[in-house]
Image 1 (tube, helix red, strand yellow):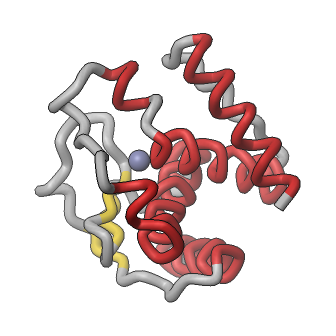
Image 2: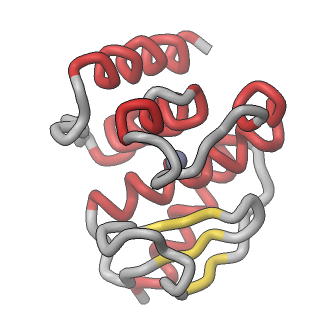
Length: 140
Ligand SMILES: [Zn+2]
């Protein structure tokens, strides 16, 4: 039942992004931190919990947006992309791929659930960049 709802949500967001719905696998063995809830390897989405929480919905929208980035402008988003853990958190969060994925997930949370993520664990600068990108996505 819960899985069906998550499937439906992924299907809906994939449609919004005009991407093929990815395979969903409940496997956390590739996760890099204990707080990770979702991971995308460019093809499949790996998920941790089966309970639906706003955090999980946010993470899924974020990972699906990475698939959209790969499909639409891989060169721009990933030619200089560095994985988490290889650079400091601030630099990681300021990468165009992360800013765009966060901004997209923000618009989904707002439009689908009426929730506005606060990005409390992020710096003023990262929050400002995300906000700027949200405005661009809304205008598109
Ligand atoms: Zn990301």
